[in-house]
Image (cartoon, rainbow, N blue to C red; front, side, top):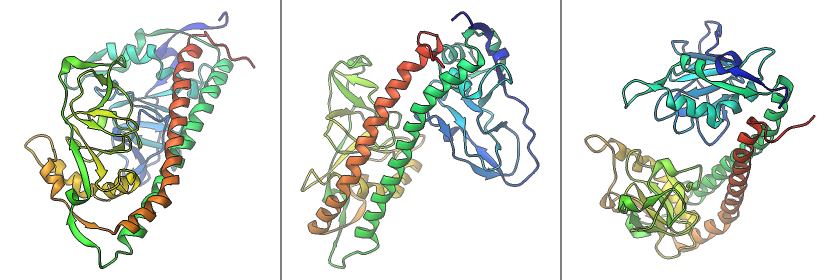
Length: 381
């Protein structure tokens, strides 16, 4: 720690640096919804005519400066911009390493540290609904930080974990797309004229969630996990966040979970018996609970119609039990469903195994990050 020095954050990091972008149409554009708290990299970019907003290049960190995005950890590193530069929302700060002082990859991990995030949250300004953290707030943040070469070694260790997480996430995306292609082959592109028309309630049993008493909630793992909607959902499986000691409605292992209140239509799959709040509904196939892959992809094929209920209601969209029951479906024969389930089971098992690895690697990274940042764990050459 003897070589570590105290820095003012704004002296260590280049905040909202100037980026000269040629007036070329179109230009890569990133907005707040493209930042995902569960992944390091922000690779999505659409293309728009150059306008106002933040400017950035590949390798920069985008740090949400507005509630609730800041609290939700929307912090990503830019990667994959077509021309190497882009622009986007004014609602995030752009962080970059300073030449000879700090490494941009290290700056990304530093921005995710508790010290930086908590400082930003404690310096939010404005109305309670739309508070923002100003650039000047970082002038009052002082941190003990390592020399440049050690920064690179620290970032290298954490990047190895994030690169593996990113690889597994991309593999899961490919696997799910493969399963969706199989579903289309079996049930959409090659329909059997003898299949019957019916309603969603003819094929699936489902449970509409009901929220327990608020005084039963806790975040200490006491009771049973409870999922309330989109905030708890991940790529395929929900993340434990809130528990309840007084569960009311349940989802079972492998049930398909759908958010039923704004935003309607987010989808996940239960990994355990859990409580579902009023923002979630759980689905399972009526005649064979092990046909969970068929259930998941059949509901996924109906999401466009389900999401149309986002436009219902005076303020927030919602979908009711009767709305679900009245959705039109084509009901295939059991033999075809069984064949699809058998062909898809190994794909979904691989997705599940990958997700377990992602959770383990994420926990390892999140445990290691603060210890590396405060010098408790040293990275030698």
